[in-house]
Amino acid sequence: MKNADMPFSLAPELQRDCIELADWPLCKVLLMNDSQYPWFILVPREAGLKEIIDLCETQQVTLLRESAKLSKLLQQVFNPDKLNVAALGNMVPQLHIHHIARFKTDAAWPAPVWGKLPAVPYSDEQITSLKAYF
Image 1 (cartoon, rainbow, N blue to C red):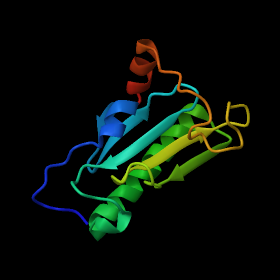
Image 2 (image 1 turned 45 degrees about the horizontal axis):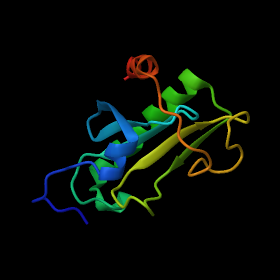
Image 3 (image 1 turned 45 degrees about the vertical axis):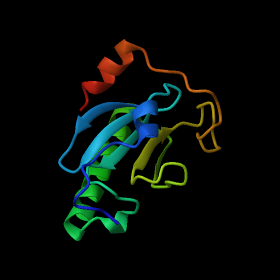
């Protein structure tokens, strides 16, 4: 359950593993720093959230809209075979929603991407290029 007295901060794991791309009306947009997969994460900028149901109804609608916006962007930019969208949180309890563009040719297909291979960080040029979409 969210705590109105706590300021928002990004979970340490997300700070360590991701690159901040943008702040949308509700969510921070992150890029997982693994260039093997177009892997983006939305994190609502509210303290203490663990579940989507911890958001008020208006925020839930905004989250859905931002998720759809990101999904459409991934389809347009990457043309994936499949979009994986998931809010798991077993390792990082802070509410965050993964959006991963998957390809039949990617290194992990058809298995989940988590822990399959060591991460391959993005170059500065790749990050600059991706930031242009946000």
